Length: 499
Image (tube, rainbow, N blue to C red; front, side):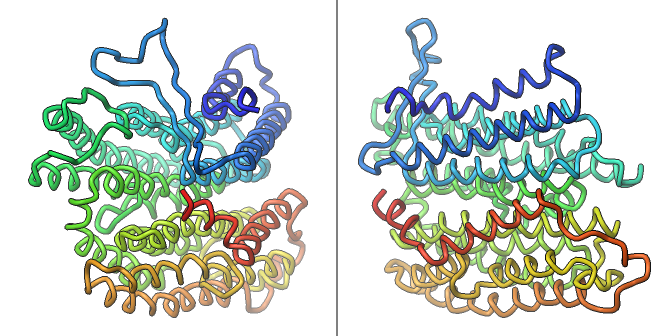
C-alpha cells in the first residue's frame, strides 16, 4: 500500500496533466478537454480519499525527492521534502474535493479558451497541494509563489461570453490587485523565512530549512517578534486579515463562478495554514505574546466585516465579505493556543470551504439564468427555480450556524476554545463579543434569501429552467458534506486532536 500511496503523485500529477492539456498534441475539442479534466479531478479526489482512509496520525506520509542523488540545495540544507500530517491530509482532501466541484461547475460557465483555463486550473491545484504538504520553508515559498501565476490568469482571463468589455477590464484590474497584494505579502514572508533560517543556524548550529529542524530555541526575542510580524503580513493577505482584505471582494466578484469557488473554498485557507505551520508551530513563544492583539484583529474581521456584508447588494460580494468575516473564526481559534482551538480552526476551514462552494454555485446559477446578481432587482427566483431555492435555504441555514451542520460545530468549538484559553483574559471577552456575529450573519444571509429569491415572478423569468443534473450534483455534494461533518464531527476532530 505504501507504494500506491505516493505524496509526489498526489501533488504533481495535476501539474503533469496540466502540461498535457495545454500541449499542442492534446485535442482542442471543448467536450474532450472538459470531460478529461472532470474525469481526472474525480480520480484525484478518490485517490485523496484513499490516502485519508489509510492515514495514521502516528505515521504521517513523508517523501523526499533527490536530484542525481543529492538534495535540492544540499550545501544549504534545503530539501525537496514533503510531509502530510493530520492537518495537511484534511486540507489536501478538501482541495481535491473543491477542484472536482469546480471542474464540474465549469461545464456551464466556461465558453472559450478551454485548454488554457483547464490547464491553469490544474496548475493551481498542484501549487496549493504543494503548499499544504511542503516540509521545507523554501519549498513552501516556491509553491506559494507558483500559485500566483495560475490564480492571476484564472481571475483575469476571458472564459465566458456573459460579461461586457467593461467587466473584462474590471477582472484584469482585480487580478492585478490580487498579484500586488500577494507579492507585497510575499516580500515580508521571504524576509521572515530568511531571518528564521539564518538565526536558527546561528543559535542551534543546524543548517536546515526543514520544519522539523527549525525552532525558536535560542533565537533572540526581538528577532522572533520581527519574524512573526513579517510572516503574519504575508499570510494575513491571503487569510485575509483586515486591513489586508481589499483585494478579495473584487477578485470574487469579477472571477467566473468555478474560480470564485476555489478562491473562497481553498485559497484563503493557505493563509490560515501558513499561520498554523509557521507562527503557531515554529514560533510559539512570539505567537503567544502577540495572540491577544491578533485576537482583536480576528474580532474586527468577525464583527466589522459582518456590518459591511449587510450593506452589499451584489450576491457575490455578499458571499465574498462573509468569507472575510468567517476567516476571523479561523484566526481566533489559533489565537486560543490550545488543542481545541487548533481543531476548531481547521474544522472551520473545512466547513467554510463547503459553504462558500455552495453559495458561489448558487450565485453563478442565478447569474447564468437571470443575467443579474443584484438582490434589489432580482425577483421571483424561488418561483422560477424551486429546487435551487430549496438548496439555497438549507445552505444558508448551514452558513449562519444552525445546529446539525458543520459550521455550527466549528464556530461553537472556536468560542469554547477562546473562553477556555488559559493565557489571556482578553480572549474570553473577545469570544463573548464574537457571539453576536451569529445574529449578524443571520441578518445578511436572510436578507440575501428574502430579497434575492422571493417576490413576484417577472414575465421574462417565466421560461427559465431549474437546476440541471450537473448543478444538482455539485450542490448535493456540498450539502452532503455539511450534514456529514455536522452530524459526525468526530470524523475530523479525532484526526485533528490526535495529530
